[in-house]
Length: 414
Image (tube, rainbow, N blue to C red; front, side):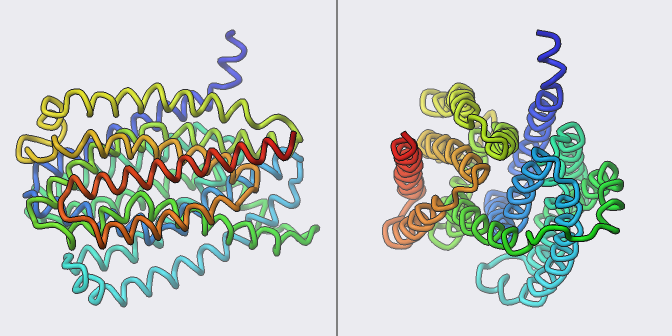
C-alpha cells in the first residue's frame, strides 16, 4: 500500500495542488463578484469567456504536447523528444508573438463590437502570448509525468491572480484591474514553470532530427485544435453572448450562475490531466486504456455530481453564500446550469481519453454541437433560464454522442 502511494505520489500531489488552485481561482471569481457591480462582473465574465476562446491554441498545445511527450517517453525515444521540443518551441514562440500582436491591434474593434473595456481587451493579446508559452511547458511536464512541478505552477498562477487582482480592484481600477491581475499571474507562473524545464531545453537545443516526425506532429496538433476549439466554444460561448442577449441585471445573474457552475466543471480538471497522460502512455505500449477512463468517470460523477445535486436541492441557500445576495435570480438558474456543467466535465474526460489514444474524429461531433448551441442561443434565448436550458440540452446530447462513439469503437474492436 505504501509502495503504491509513493508510486502515485506525483499524481496525488497534482490532484491536491489542482484543488488548491481551483479554490484560489474560485476565490478570485467570488471576491470579484462582491467587489464589482453586477454589470461590471458580467463584463469580467465575458472577458474570461473571450480569453478562453481566443487562447484555444494554448489548450491545443498543452494536450497535444502532453500526448506526444508521453508517447516518446513511453517508448524511450529521447532523440525524438528532444527534436520535438526544439521544433515546437520555435513554432510556439513565433506563433504566439504574431497572434498576440494581431489581437492587440484589433483590440479597439473587438472592444467596440462587444461593449467591453478597451484596455482589458488590449491585454488579451499579451495574455495569449504568455498563455501559449505557459501551456507548452505545462504540456511537457504533463506528458513527462512531472506532476509536482505542474501542480506548483498552477497554484502560483491562481494565487497570483487573486492577490494582484484584488489589490488593483481595491486601488480603484475596476474591471481593468481585475483582468490585469489575471495577465500578471500567467507571467509569474511561467517563471515557476521554467525551473524544471531548463535541462530539457538545453538538451533539445543541440538535438538533431533522426526521425521524420514533423508532418505527423503537425497533423496531430491540427486535429487536436478542432477538438479543443469545439469544446472551448461549447463551454464558453454562452458567457460571451450573455451580454448581448440579456439585459444588464439578467446578464449579471447568469454570470453568477456560470461562476457557480465552474466548481462543477473545473474541480476535477486534474483527473483529465492524469487521464490523458495515462491513456497516451498505455496506448503507446499496447496496454489497456479503458480502466483509467472508467475510474475517472466514476470519480467525477461522485464529486462534481454531488455539487450539481446540491445546486438543485439548495439553490436559495448556496447562492448567497457563494456569490452574494446581490444575485437573487441566480437561484432559478444554478440547478439547471450545474447539471450542464457536470455533463461538460464528463465530456472533458472523454476528450482527454480520445486525444490520448489519437482518435480525433470526436471533433466532428463537437463541431456540430457548437453550431447547434449557437443557433439555439441566438434564436431561442430570451431569458437566463432559457439560456441555461439550451446549454443543458446541448451538453447532454454531446455527452450521448461521445458515449456512442466509445461504444461503437469497442464493438468494432470486439
